[in-house]
Length: 225
Ligand code: SF4
Ligand code: SF4
Image (tube, protein in one colour):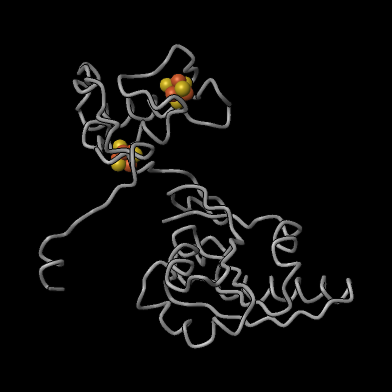
């Protein structure tokens, strides 16, 4: 899932301070699981903005909406019925949702209410940990299902650095050294010989930071035609 955290309220209030009619749109998917962008958070943000505006003696009309998935065109289509009635939209979806609204409803002003952080998993209530960096060339088959790209502080691919100590990463005692976890897992799987393999330099051209990536599923594209 995509993990996103709320922007500081002060920052959001600053983003909408010049508007008198805004619409807050949440998303019913990942950010609902994160408790940062679902229907409840839309209601909470609207209430806080109303209180802040009233305190400042400002008129602020707010519409509250949550769509099932803000990153998909079909789910944001109903937004078109009213979005032009507002000065701006505060999206509390991930950055994909914000951009879906901004592109579809240009030139409507769409501002982000969240900071999108990483792809991760909830490991206990209220705690999300990064699990994948979308490198485009997955190596989990050789690492016992633990990702060295996102979970090693240096994204090392050929075993631990010299700072691995007692199962922890040298960066912080709170961070497990993923190479220690990989070793333990491969040992349990009787696959420790993978630790001896030398992995050649990874093809980073398919990872983030190269150019905007795309995925084409030919049979779906043909169905569309
Ligand atoms: S190896 Fe790459 S694709 Fe696989 S989990 Fe890690 S970052 Fe994600
Ligand atoms: S201690 Fe382990 S997790 Fe930390 S940077 Fe070194 S190899 Fe990576």
